Image (cartoon, rainbow over the protein chains, first blue to last red):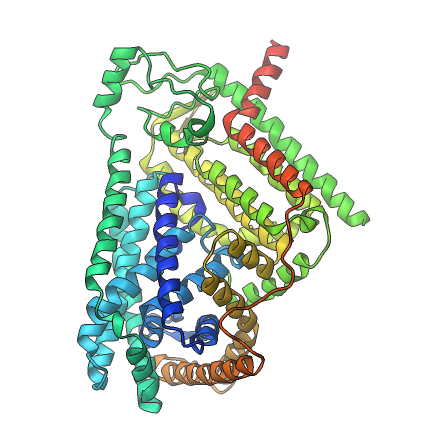
Amino acid sequence: MHMADALLSPAIGGTFWAASAGAIAWCAKKVQQGLDDRNVPLMGVLGAFIFAAQMINFTIPGTGSSGHIGGGILLAILLGPYAALLTIASVLVVQALFFADGGLLALGCNIFNMGFLPCFLAYPLLYKPIAGSGKSRRRIAIGAIFAAIAGMQLGAFGVVCETVLSGISALPMHTFLWAMLPIHLAIGLIEGLITASVVTFVWQARPEILDCAAGAHPQSSAPITKVLICLAVAAALISGVCSWFASKAPDGLEWSIARVTGQKELAAPLAGIHGSLAGLQEKTALLPGYGFRNSGQEPAVHLEGQSAWPAVDPGATVAGLVGGGLTFLLIIWLALVFRKRRRAA
Amino acid sequence: MPTIESAFFELHRLDHLAAQDSVIHRLDARIKVLIIVAFLVCVISFDKYEIAAMLPFALFLIVVLGLGGIPSGFVINKLILVIPLAVLIGLFNPIYDQQPLMQLGAVTISGGWISLFSLLLRFCLTVGAVLALIATTGFNTVCMALEQLGMPAVFAVQLLLLYRYLFVLVEEGQRLDRARKLRSFQGRGLGMRAFAPLIGNLLLRTLDRSQRIHLAMRCRGFDGAIRTCRLRRLNSRDVLVLVVAGGVLFAMRVFDGPSLLGRFVTGLLA
């Protein structure tokens, strides 16, 4: 599943954007170092191949439904992790821009979930050790299956974490996990079987292709330390963001601030970066009162007891509805004007 | 979920739209990318219970789409195709989030419903914004803009090549699929067993193709970089647009326009 922009908070989106941009820059450097400019068209065309392969559905035994290949692990096996990450990222960019599958800000998350995790965890930790030097058909197949399943599980786990941390969806973590992981176990198994059979087909028909992929990137098995360092950094970033968001849960701090200052939130200057990050601050608020806060002009002074919900302010509600309705009408009117203009043109 | 076939039909349509000429089309692509990113950040930074304050952003989007000559039907169709995902995730909000947030006469509206509508609205806005960018700019120009904004050159080349061969390979995939379906009776041969050799063959053909492409590129002096002759300089108009649009977006994010409007109107009536 692709993350959508709408499910993200800026902090999570930004964190993963930074991580993925770093990964892309690093991989771009690696690919450029190892170039062989033959790889340039190869990566481009293989990216397009993924779309072509997704045109062809197969029926899934036992269910009657049909599926198509995802292709992440297949690319990693064919190209090695660095070039594969770039290729997967490019596929995701096209999907985000043209198919509205994922979004621009969610690209970071998607590249991380579907590119980084399979290429730099599942591939080197599972496929490489199991498949070895690529001399045995069975080992290649088993490696591909396990890597695909692991990649899919990690990706699904990533989606759940990112969604829950963003806090736009009210879905609790464990429920979401219970929904996502079993489904993606099945998807991963099918993906693994398909990948394994395609890879063994290629291996039988033209073994030099796989040898070439394995040989051209000897580093793919080596830099486990680097990968671990990257992961540690990512984990630190994520946990940093987590702890930031965790402050949403214990009201204690907020409550004590309220006791101390007589305000629900510490009034922050709303200009500059504070303004643009207001969404973040609002998320740390005790309860996001829907009193149509006037951008902080009224610093929410009512000090309710811990058990009570924030007082529903009918005046603000009406104002919000009227204003919202008027804006909505304005939108419709403008759309009609433009439509008329287009017709006339 | 849209079928991939229809999605590819839309691809041609998007390319067609991007080839038009309008005020928005003539803007520098970098400016457009920056404005769209600012737009997206503003929209997703809203509180999850916010609806009304987000509406001005729809206004902004409508103006951009209108000036760019993008038919609203096209955008709405696209939204309808992809919105089930948002609904699927959002539908859990009313179930899990039942704290009352709004009182309309006798009806109490829970936070979950409000956040569901907020989620759908921000979904429409973010998807619409990305569509507006690509439909008024075109993929190649967006790639070049991203490269000028600091994306690694290798990745830009990758995107350009991918897009160039997308159409060729997808048509090949479609042909294979059609041929297989025509030869299949009662769904036989559509399973996984026949699928792997089919895809494997497509893969081998693709690899051969990439080798031919590489040789052809070498013959024409390819050295790992794709050069373009249309490097535009930013003119003062572009900068002005960026400043104005950025200012408008910032103002819309900071001031809750509809609420102010509502207060003003109810104040007049009272």
